Image (cartoon, rainbow, N blue to C red):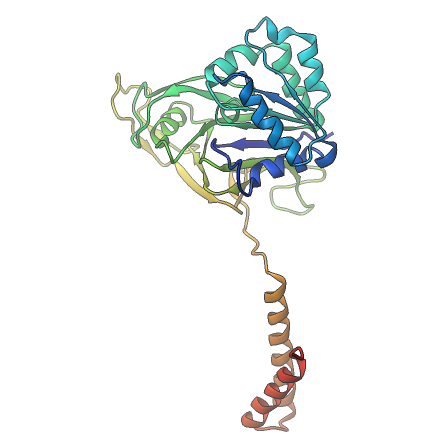
Length: 330
């Protein structure tokens, strides 16, 4: 069975208007059959954080919403909490303190149940702290700034749902370019992924067509697509030149040769090959009808010119009559 989608939300997702991201989460989780496990461990808020997401998810049609809130590693061994995740079609981790979230979940039965849910096909989503923990390496904390500096941030282990990567959130709004660049400069095997607020990186397993340059029979790639209001920034340091191994204390770090990808909504990126997926423009129905009509006109004109049976003025009058005849009657 293919692994389920990952929904990596940069925080502050729209909860009042279109709710684009939350709607997609419920739809991917099964719509009216969705059974959601909400994990608010990272949050400093009380029951109200659960009440908010319970109301939102039920409003979007979810059949069941259950709270899974371990507050210690001991509680993360509770069989009832594990069972709630095992029965879920969607898992949603709220925002808050990501270091608290990883310290309580990673390496416990509840954390293992989240990983198992992803592998059996359930949707795993997280906003803010719940986004960061999905990567193999997680930003623990650190300050803002555009320039990467030594000791600017620290890294902890994440759940590893998205391998060989590090995820940061509230990315553009809190100017976190420098700290993500510091991490990939120190660990060039990692792909840096920064997600803006009210924006989601949806990562899915996609079958590669037979005959594709990077594909083979039955091969699948991890493809990231962007939905929401902002953008996803990807930093690929595979060919970086850096002095991160010798920079002192809080000195600026050399980072040359990092490939930067800025992906707005509608973009897609192949994480397996680290390449942009060619964009296919969507044509609205009315535009398609207009293009079809223009194509018919051009074909008629070509036939008439080939037959040499009309002057250009005659052709223009004929096209005008044809368009008038096809126009809807008022």
